[in-house]
Length: 466
Image 1: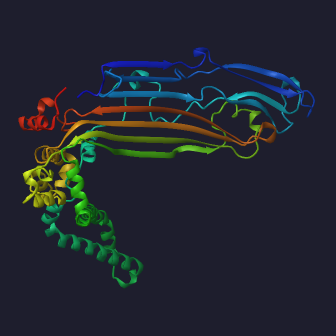
Image 2: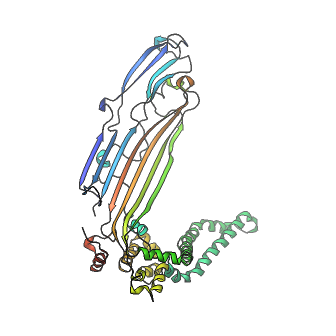
Image 3: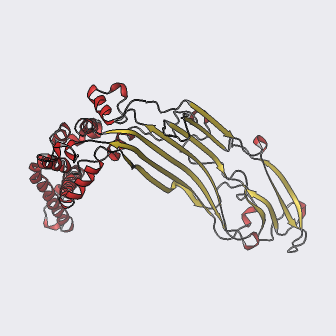
């Protein structure tokens, strides 16, 4: 499946005034000290350079019949926003605190600045922001990598018939004694090391202790694996088993009600938010904000100015789909509802059925294989399609990301200049991506790759290729 649509649109908004954008400002001095009568001695119209665009965006999509719109497709969009707000900020009148500045032949006295302040020219190099040729391409490095998101969408969004892992839990009962031994050994080693640290005089040499501490990362790794891939899954299986016992009737009724029906489901796949000061990019004083870093502008404020660059990232991805499954033992009108149907329903709910996926899960170190390959996911999809007759009418993933660098300059202007202010500019970009499953069995299979058995299941479920 292609990630790009058949239609491409692009829009670039130049800065106001284009290449002729200017910042106008002037300095004046009091004709008589503290008279509030001013004599202008400098007037400047300064070019604002270095901003080739205000916003730039590009979109890849498709045109679908409608309204109403009942079908979707691949979608990709990126939008870059340059320095915002553009140009000078906080335009107004600002009056110096002291009287002792000498300006050519105009004499001494308070001085007044009329104008605004320009943003800094230096920004943390998180992205090559001005390379529009690259940034507005479908291979832009600003697009988050969505590889593997489709597998996660299938696993998290599909209806779950199995709500426990009893088969795997029983198969791994033999590992419980070893898990206890590893955990007990961790407590023993922690006690021995701490005792020797706080009572070193009771021991002949600290050499062996130093060696134990040197080897601590290896031991920590062993206990990490024991905890995350031993105790955590085991306790989850135990919790699921107790939940199934408690809510057995309600869960069976819900699965029976949904059996053979289209079920619309949504799930969150990624939800990340970061807001932090860029390391090394903050401090006291004025940071390249023209003309605050020039004399006599440094007499416009009282107190200590400070500045910082903040980096903000938000990633959100979700999946939405419509699924249908059918198992005759969950159909009250089927002959398989009675008799052994009770046993089959219980085995399905508790996750105790014998199938290739469960056997694979019970194989030692299969969790490590799943970290490196999609073997486990592929077996799960095979079980979903063959054993549960599960398929999707449609399944989409969407990924929305925003990333921003914001510069903030706090200036404690004196009372004659209006008091403290915070100047702020930002550069940012936003991306949106939508992917459509390649077939009713997820993102890794296309219609052309489906087996005759899978195609027969789809026909029985009423899903036809469009």
